[in-house]
Structures are given as C-alpha cells and as structure tokens.
Amino acid sequence: MPGLGHWTSQLAKGTLTFEDVVNEFMASDEFINTYGENLSNEDFINLLYSNVLGREPDKNGFENWLEALESGSLRADVLLGFSDSDEQLLTLLYDAAFNRSPDENGIGHWINQLARSDIELEDIVELFIVSEEFQALYGEVQSDDDLIESLYQNTLDRHSDQEGKGHWLGLIASDKMDYAELLVMFAESTEHVDIMLTGNGTLYADGIAL
Image 1 (cartoon, rainbow, N blue to C red):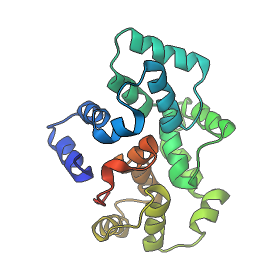
Image 2 (image 1 turned 180 degrees about the vertical axis):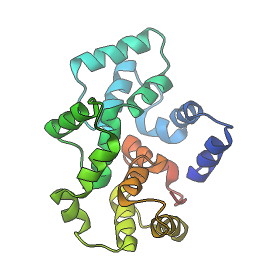
Image 3 (image 1 turned 90 degrees about the vertical axis):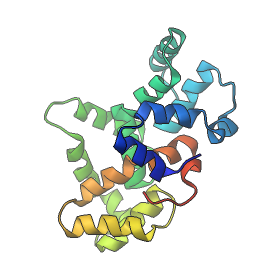
Image 4 (image 1 turned 45 degrees about the vertical axis):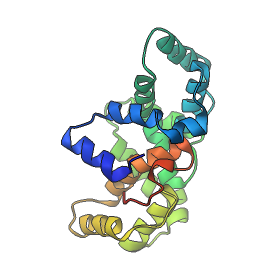
C-alpha cells in the first residue's frame, strides 16, 4: 500500500479525490486483514463509531447510518460523513491535545458551542492550548522544537523525522503558523486519521514524514 507521500501528492495534483483514497484504503490488505473481508453493514457502522468517534453508537445515529447503507449509500460515503462531522474533528483534537478520547459531557459541550454562529473550531483549539490539561501534558514552557516533538509522539505515536520537524519549525519561526494552527494540522493529518481508524497506523508504518 502506498505511503502518505503518495496520497498527498495525488490529492494535490487532483489525480485522486479524497473519496478515491477512502475506497483504496478500504480495499487495502491492511484494512481487510484487520477487520475481515465480509463486514456486515452493522459491523461496519460499529467499527466507525468505535475507531472514528471513540464511542458506542447511539440508537438514532446507528439506525440512520444503517438505513443509508441499506438504501444504497456507499460505505466510502458513510466513512466520509463520519470524517467530516464536528464530532470527528473534536475527537481528533482531543487525542492530539490531551492524548485521550473525549468525555461525553466535554464533547457534547463543544459540539453545542460549534452550533453557535459566533464560535469556530479555531476558538476551541485556543482554549484547549491554554487549558491545565494541555499544559500538564506538554509543559507550560516548551521550545518550538520540544512542542513539535511532543506532538509527533502524542499524536502520531512516533518520533519526528528531520524533514517533517524542519518544515514545522520553519513555519513557526516565520510566523506563518501559530501553535493552534499547528495542533489542528497534526490532529487532522491523514497519518493521525489512519492511526485513529486502524488503531496502529498501518498505512504509514514506513516512516514517511507527515
């Protein structure tokens, strides 16, 4: 299975859409070996709730997704629906910022905040960064280098590569990116999504830079 560099290049060139990538991902040996070749619709939905959102399905949500699949929706479209939801974005951010799954009350609060027209995701990220939990995990005062290394280890479960770390350091040093934007980039990266979905990041085990 090609690595992250391949997919990033294809998406940037417009050769593939994200839906194409999802289809190839779901047809990969890694996915099939992990989850089986003949997942029922019910098992597929349970898998998405568990690995994408980090929780058990709620009754209404499960039934809505099941009805969509049984009415002819493609599994790739359902996966994209999960991936584009506010809940999924917040779940990725919780893992990147706090190295844990969101608690029910916490994520419910932030989903409600996002539903308000005057609150944006960037506002929530800023609050995450100044929180006591974030400071306890990453340290109150860290160099740019140390923070980036911590993000690699807490979010991507690996040490940084020289090229990748140099890229992020350059953006911060030139004031083209702040810490909040950096956290979002790590949280929403394809490598992090892969880790959250498969539990082990099998597609990018070759160590290709973020």
